[in-house]
Length: 306
Image 1 (cartoon, rainbow, N blue to C red):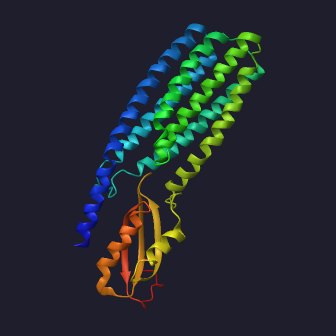
Image 2 (cartoon, rainbow, N blue to C red; image 1 turned 60 degrees about the horizontal axis):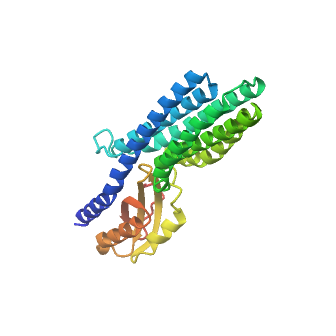
């Protein structure tokens, strides 16, 4: 009986996310379309004006399109139902993609730094005005796409990855605009690599959190929003629970968290009722999948029954 109740609640939970899923899907699609258009325009202009800066920026923007496609793919895969081989479905792919996205961002930073050092050592004349104009469009495209992800970036690491890629790119484009304008008025070509290196450092700083969190989730670490001592306190505060042990919390995806625990009950006849109440309390902390093993007081579990 208790089980049906849990299922129902999970069902409502699912419906609650439906509108958000639809809107995020649209946001990903719009972001990808916008950025593909911009990459094509930037490649064209880079070839036409023979600007290495524009071509490398277009290449960088192309890595963004790839990261958006990856994030959208993970978002779709997370909806796949459980199978006999993947009993949680493919939800964990969201964690792997967020890790991959953090790595892609850091590789992009490496490329920006090495190109900047190269330009610094061998400064080349560039068409400042043209570069500033095209990068200005980039600021708008990337800034607008980043703005689309802003609202959901703290609820899902994948959305955060997409947001960081776009925000980093908007920043790169701002740098290109600034260097384009300075070059146009002063002919001081060395400003281009200097700004490139500064931007790379800012991107490393903002990506570090994404890398750390996605690594932690890949290793089945406790998600950053979950406080284990707090969870213990919540479980033992339920009337009838004497204590809790063998407590494990891990991510199923970038948005779903699971828990298993052994709870010692003072009154085994109220077992279903107590379990239901514990699950109810845990659902308020964002733990949607709780599996509880109940025990009688005095039973020694040190032999490793969990």
